[in-house]
Amino acid sequence: MRNRRAALATLAGAASLALTLSACGDTTAGGRKVGSGDGTIGIAMPTQASQRWLTDGKSVVDDLKSKGYDTKLVYGQDNPKTQVAQIEKLVEEGVDALIIAAIDNKSLNGVLQQAAAAKIPVISYDRLILGTQNVDYYVSFDNEQVGRLQALYIVDKLGLEKGKGPYNIELFAGSPDDNNTQYFFDGSMHLLQPYIDSGQLIVRSRQTTLDKVTTLRWDGPTAQRRMQAVLSQSYGNRKVDAVLSPYDGISIGVLNALKADGYGTGSKPLPVITGQDAELPSVKSIIAGEQSQTVYKDLRELATVAADMADDLINGRTPNVNNRRSYKNGVKAVPARLLQPTSVDRTNYEYVLVAGGFYTDAQLK
Ligand code: GAL
Image (cartoon, rainbow, N blue to C red; front, side, top):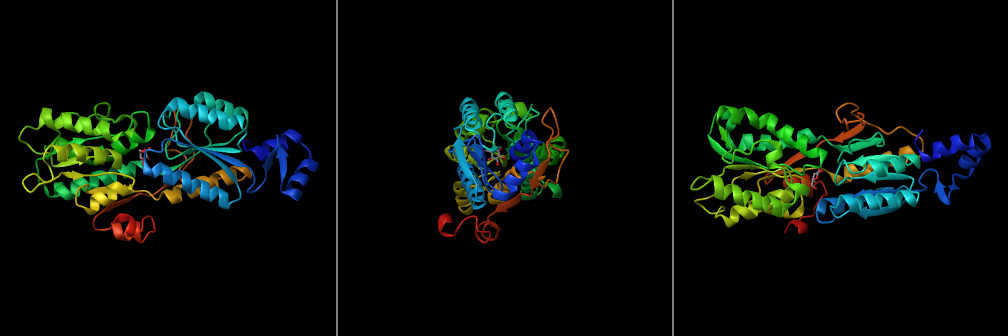
């Protein structure tokens, strides 16, 4: 029994306390309110530098507030140590549950030990926390499917199934300390590798394994520098026809390098370039015909599931999951609720993003 209310009842071991709890729906443990919709949830997000995490933070806070909770939202500015210190503080302050999108998935073992000792339930948000028993639930999207959607877009646009090629492709992956990176890459490579093996796709840089293509902290300028180096070292007069990019911030960095190299003109068109998160600059880039595609994940849905999970755990209910086996964190398989991503390009952004209420037309102008 990990949730605070259940823990309190165990500690007291008395029907009278249970009666008090249900009668008042409001009691205190160390000065905190507990009960349905009462209590404070700590939310640790990775960075404010990317629009998506701002949306995530705001959506989780709004959902929890609408259920009656107080919230403490912190951003670790992509520094693992900062995030650990922030979570330590939230534990000390006695939050009733933690929702965490980790910066470095392996850096939280110590602080989550403290959370477990304080009987604070932990929800791993979007990125799986690794190497610890002390993570209770995971909410994310089907991360392999994200990678598959990116690869499928490339396969389709280049006509690989019809036997076309050879085409030049370069591969980018996310941050090596983010568990999602491997899932995205595996999902993509499952579909791309056969075409690399058959020679329809050629990776001129020869950088094809995950360790060669990651991008620390998903940083756009880092990807831009790598793309610049690849173009100057491996391309000469040749052209790159496709770039597998796992995330919009990386896609924008790659596009900057390509444009600086003369791509985007009649004789040197931009390659097919994928992305993820439907961030505003990338959706505008898609509309302008630069970035080709992104994978949209409805963060409002993700936030709602996380808020529901926290509410369930605080109130002794079992959260709804749809996957109990796929997300193993090195210590255990973490029960997960996985949502479905959607591929978005110029042909369907109006329908998915505007009609779906994620952006207004005015924002996309
Ligand atoms: C991943 C996340 C992606 C993207 C990336 C960079 O963990 O699943 O959607 O946001 O981080 O922030």
